[in-house]
Image (cartoon, rainbow over all chains, first blue to last red; front, side, top):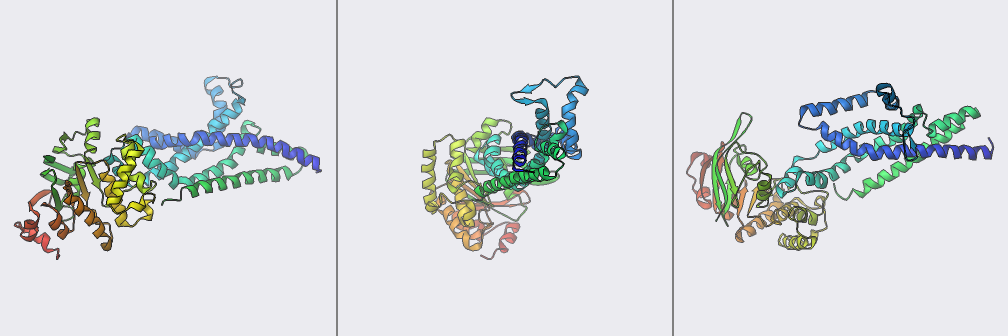
Length: 225
Length: 244
């Protein structure tokens, strides 16, 4: 491989990397609030409602993410006869959108369980103190409970976020030209393992950044225990 | 003026009867101590009076407002009439001392930050914690934390203050500071109901003592009389267990 080939490889990988980062960012954006809602539903006193969310979490965790992505992509056509080829939101085609929907639905299930663990670990006294001080339920949740839960669940959330960086490579099944797809194509075209190694370095650098950022966030909340 | 009016309340947890017909009136400026063995219903009585538990029967009135669990507005109103100091403080660990004291003033009682800070400064001074406004609860001793929680309960100028064993979670050498604060409040004629195991403190500070056991008020009377000269056998047996 000469210098030109390497530069071109990096260039192409970078383009794929942008898709990977896109999937990553949108998934984080949607799956965390969705996970909070699901954890609320899972903890509902209404048994039927709680059972629905428990089932949802069970299925999402119990089946392959790759299969879920394929279902989101092909489901609309095979189940409802809806053609998705011409769906576009801004610069994003349905392949990309489907992968974000699939990732978000799946990761929300994992986040929901993490949040549930955090919320249920909160001492009852915090709720009681807030109640007698006159805070409404919503105020109690957003001012007192959630900020503390956030600190408690951060290490587990970091785990999921790091996994997500690597999982974005699964979007290849929908032929999204994310970095792994690009690396695979380059490797077979050049009959070389170097594109894979280069892609590996990209993933690792990204996760190194994730670790640093999450570490900073954790530190910024270490003023209390 | 009558601040607290508890009329014939009953409370059970599943099959366990915890309160078996309790009536208690507290007048403005009065300090009432509630003593008795563990499991006798003292804490449950306090939790019922502070809306943390619902009662099965009877009625509770604080500051002239009838407790009605179904009426959200009256619930919010009644919660503005009392303060509660917990055994385990229950401060908000992610808030500074100042924010612990002012947050309810600002977001529940809609006072300005300025106004709330002024109230906070006065209370901190009173608690001997003037330099601790920016500290976080985890950096304070248990005694200091409990004084912060007293300040938090006082911030909204309640008609009555409830204490649930305020020194039981403290190391012995830290109880004095907290008890002194309560003593000062008593001298200022703050209306208070104190569940406590500190008999000599109850005798010195309270106007009236209630002895509870088995979910009923077994004996009640002026503080010194009840401690020094109990009439009921159960009260005598209980007090005999305390040598002070």
